[in-house]
Picture (cartoon, rainbow, N blue to C red):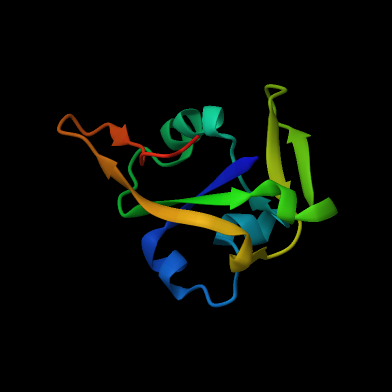
Length: 111
């Protein structure tokens, strides 16, 4: 199963061996991920004004017990990783672009 991390392009480019997470991730004590179905809502809620984003696809099966699916405020189960993300678990990383009307256009091959 693939899970997805939305990352600022510069933060992602700086990762070496493992990704330590955003400032929000570090403050919360885990890395926030989304399922494929959750990505549009996550982008709309938390990244509406953001540009220069990367969508990182991660093989959830390689993360072991440090990956937990936990309920959000609305009850949806979101994947949370309680360790740095090993880059060896990453299947691909692709730019999230914006279409002509400014809406996010997700990369091909998400599912």
